[in-house]
Amino acid sequence: MAKHVVSGSKRTVRAVNAATLARLREAGLRPTRQRLALAALLFDGHPHGRHVSAEALFGEVRAAGAKVSLATVYNTLHQFTAAGLLRELVVDPGTSLFDTNVGDHHHLYFEDSGDLRDVDADRIEIKGLPATPKGAEVARVDVIVRLRRRS
Amino acid sequence: MAKHVVSGSKRTVRAVNAATLARLREAGLRPTRQRLALAALLFDGHPHGRHVSAEALFGEVRAAGAKVSLATVYNTLHQFTAAGLLRELVVDPGTSLFDTNVGDHHHLYFEDSGDLRDVDADRIEIKGLPATPKGAEVARVDVIVRLRRRS
DNA sequence: TTTTTAAACTAGAATAATTCTAATCTATTG
DNA sequence: CAATAGATTAGAATTATTCTAGTTTAAAAA
Ligand SMILES: [Mn+2]
Ligand SMILES: [Mn+2]
Ligand SMILES: [Zn+2]
Ligand SMILES: [Zn+2]
Image (cartoon, rainbow over all chains, first blue to last red; front, side, top):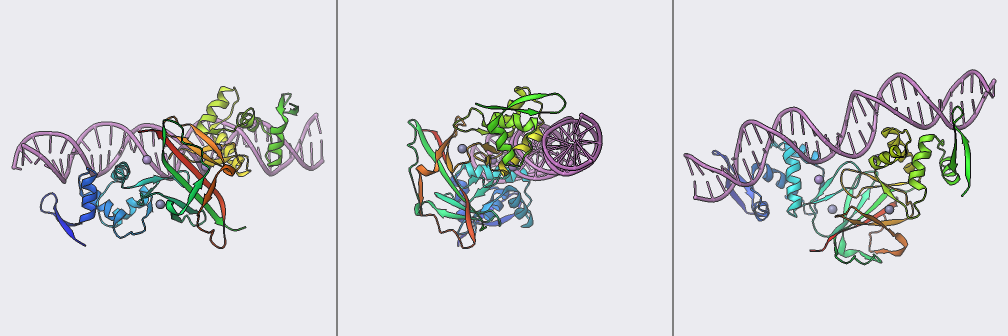
């Protein structure tokens, strides 16, 4: 996988994933140190996508040694969401999750373990929904199947 | 519609909706002044059900002249939910809504107006969902169709 | 009835998630 | 390199919700 060299401030030079860099550039977002670190955690080496909370990602990025504030984590998650790189999603009251899978899909939520699995939208069919009202359009359909241990 | 007389503390006597009283009794919840006031707002005269936030219900109950604390509103909403009289639901990050319709149904959410409409579950059919894993059961399926003004 | 008691209620403090502010820093452009 | 718009940050603020611990009350017992 090709790496590109990006000149940072001073003499710091870091190798950066080309796809990540392209993603940010296309979104009109400057490839800053913080965004690159967060994008790497979000998008690199997760072929099946991931679901992450702001607090959890903050923990990861700090553990990875990058200096990023919590405010920047929130800013970045919302910017990535606005740019279509992420989707925001709520399965439990209280916290948002950010989903790196921005394709049309739904969720299987295991209430006991907290596990969340994707279900491709093109594998399922929803019949009988009321007609979309005149002047409105469907922004998104969210299906969450909540599972618990049997009886 | 029949009213029952309930003896309150001291010499206070209030007329109370019989169905509301029965609902609380069946749930094993004492019909306190506060619960009766909240139940009246939630269940009386809303044939099509309602979706309400804790803060909004708190405003209503105070406007109705009842002295009820916000803590009691939260306690009561959660007790009613545990008793199956309400369902908790999140359409937007940040706040829970409590739904007086506890039948199997889904939602149409108008992002611009904040309006939320029920869609009976038996009018819709969802095909292609993965088989429920062994040892698990479906606790609930939530479908939220998010609508916005066209183009 | 009155008494007793567990349950319920409450104000206010505490917590959790998120957003805001205003000062500092930096990626980009000229 | 210098200028600058955009980005980052610490910490304060806000919002939704929960907790604490003292008070009240509905229901049961006497
Ligand atoms: Mn958000
Ligand atoms: Mn809740
Ligand atoms: Zn997903
Ligand atoms: Zn509903």
